[in-house]
Each structure stands twice: as C-alpha cells, then as structure tokens.
Length: 250
Length: 278
Image (tube, rainbow over all chains, first blue to last red; front, top):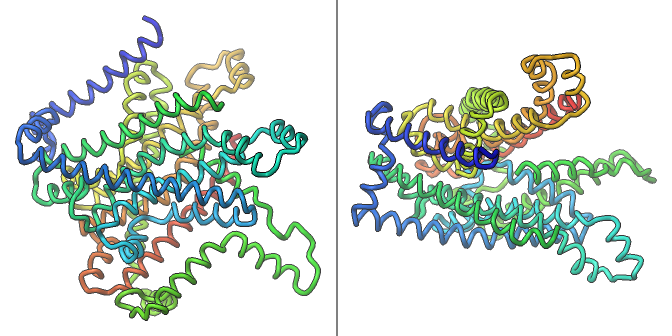
C-alpha cells in the first residue's frame, strides 16, 4: 500500500472507530443517560419538525453573528495592524495591548462589552474580538515580511512610499493574511457561541444552555456537534482558500 | 496560532528599550523608564482614561459604570471578598493543565513510537483541534456533572491539543548530526527517545504551557459562571443578582491582572528554560 493511501485509510479508520465507540457507549448507556448514541440523537432531532426548525433557526442566528463578527473583526484587526505599520512609534504599544487583550478572559471583559453593546450585540462583538486578534497579528507580521532584496530594488528604483506599500508590502502580506483568516474563522464561531451565553435571544449557544438545563441530552449533543461542524467547515474552507490563492503570492 | 504568536512574541521581545540610547538632561534613567512605559503601555493608559471619561461625562453612578479608582478602592478595601474565590479559581486551573500536559505528551510519544497509532490518532486529533473546546462546556457539564470535575476535564482538553501538537512536532524535528551519532553508537529507539528526543521536546512542552495556562483561568471562570460552582465565576453570578456592579468590575480587573501575570510568568519560564534545550 502506498504511504499516502495508508495514511488516508488509517485516518478514516480512526474517525470511524471514534464514532463507533461513542455509539456503543451511548447504546449500552455505559456513561449514563447524559451520553446519547450519536447517530440516534442526530436522527431523532432532524426527524422531528419542531426540534429541527429550532436547530436551524439557531444555526442561522449564530452564522449571522459569526459572519458579521468575522468581517468587522478582521477589518478592524487589519486596520490596526496597518496603523502600526504606518506609524512605527505606535507599534510596540499596539503589539503589547493586543497580546494583553487576547490574554484577558472573555468573562472578565463581559461587563464592559455588555455595557457597550447590550446583551443582544454580545455575540457579534465577541466573534469580532475572536477573529480580530488573529487578523491583527497576521497583518502586523505579514506587512513586515518583505524580502530585503525586493525592498532594496524598490528603493534603488526610486519608488515612493505609497508605491512600496501597494506594490510590495501588501502583496507580501497576503499569505500571512490568509493564514490569519483560518484562525479568525474558527475564532469567530467560538466567539459567537460564547457571546450568546451572555443573554442573546437566540443562537446555538442559547439552545445549548437551554437544552443543558432542561436535560435534553440529544438536542444538546446535536447542537454541540453542529457548532463543531460549523467551526470545522469554516476552518477547512479557509485552508482551501489559502491553498488556492496563496500559491500566487509565495 | 503557534506561528503567529511566536512571530508576535519575537517582535515584542526585540523592541529595544529606550535605555539603549544615551539621554541628556535631568534624571536620564527615570525619563528612559517613563519613555518605555509610554511606548508599551499607551493604549492601556488610553483605555483607562477613556473608561474614566465615559463614566464622568455621562454622569454614571457606580451602579451603571463604576470608575477605575472606585473599583481599585473596592478591591483594596475588601481583600477578603476576593482572596478566597481567586485562590479557588487559580488552584482549579492547575490539575486540568497538568493532566492535559501529561496526556498530550504521553499520546505524542505513543504516536512517535507507532506508525499505526500515528495514522489512527493524528488526523482525528487535528480535526478536534479546530473544534471550540470551551463551547463544549455544557456538554461536558451534562456528562461529568455540575462540579469541579467538569472544570478539570475542560481545562485538560484545552491544554491537551496544543501539547500534543507541539511535543510531537519537537519529537519529529530533524536533528541530523546528533541522531547520526546515536545511530552510529547503536543506541536503541528507547534510549534515543529518552536521551535525545525528550530533552529536545521540552521547549514544545513549555510553549504549550505558555499558550494554555492564561486561557485555562478564563475557562475555569466561565465554567464556574455557567454552572454556578464556586470561585470567581460564582461571585460574578451572585454579584449580578445583587446588582453589585463594582464587584463585577473588580473581578474583571483581578482576572485580567491574574491572566497577564500567569502569561508573563510562563513566558519567562519558557525563555529561561528553553535555551538549555536548544
């Protein structure tokens, strides 16, 4: 067997084993009633009209918050990264603050954020924060990743600062920006779900908490699975984009 | 996150202090350190001023938006309110982190040993890496029970993935000449692992600690908040019920400072110890 084929076969086998083990644990109630059989849970939630419409409405709300958060967070992150590039004296302070803000737990920022946008706006804001940091770091390091030879050539040829930025720094930052987007996209989904825990009216996070409190284990399990799938899809979509677009800029 | 974070960390570390340049005039040292504080901390100072301004200009009372100084005074006047919950929260982050480090490194070693285990485990783990662990809190709470065990499991999962990835990466890192020496002297796989590769993996483990420790504090508080099980998280819930806004803001400040201190300590540990293993 070729190594590549062996790798794929083993990978699929590993995933199947995991699903099978969790199915067996659920069917035989080995972990108690809180562990449903995955296939049965998905089937029963999607089979019931009421629960599936509840799930899809929540999914739509979370996707909307994560999407808006991803776009605004990325734009702000990139703008701040660009500001640090344009005004070098600000750079050290911006780097330091961004890493400090990223270290501070969301719970700690919650009162400030709720005071700013209210409980309804929390999920968009936390999604924006989740993706903004990744995009800031990607922009800040990407803009500086210019090769010295190219930079010299631009200077010798008498390029203006604007030409240097548009024709050299920005294109060189593209691979780093795409790398940042892969992190930002899954960060936005996590941020949106967490933000919904702080009083949003609807969304996967809200549905998760309500099914946890009402002991609807199948619903809870399917909602968690949906959130994980959304995060994975966003991540791998960006990885694919990175592969497609990134080649032209390396 | 690894690459970007390390790039950022290197850039932050390479910022030269203003003390490098010679300064004229009175108190050059004091001016140099003031310059350094301003260069690094201007956004934080700006944020504090903005916070104060928003509170003063809108005429907010402490119930709506307490001012920075009243929050600071509240913490210093009531240390007993915050000391115990803070200690509980910090202490709860430890067992989960340690378990995650042990399980992550152990699995990385197993995967390094066996190519079949590598094929079975590594793809699944990389898929799990993209799943938001903290968002799974309600599921784990339901499974494990609404108690401290949930917190330990969540923190363990949080530190497990980076540890596995970083330690495995270091174990597999090519190191031509040293490995050749071991090979020529007929070292077994086990002694190559113990005497060459495990020491080589230490920086990976330290990087994992630096990446996860500050976030595990946040995860502990989030779990305590959501499941109402003691510590700073429960204090937030209780204070919100009592409309005690100052306490909520005080907890926010304490958590931020604690996370930053843990980040700085783990970063210092990484910088100190990693050099010996490179």
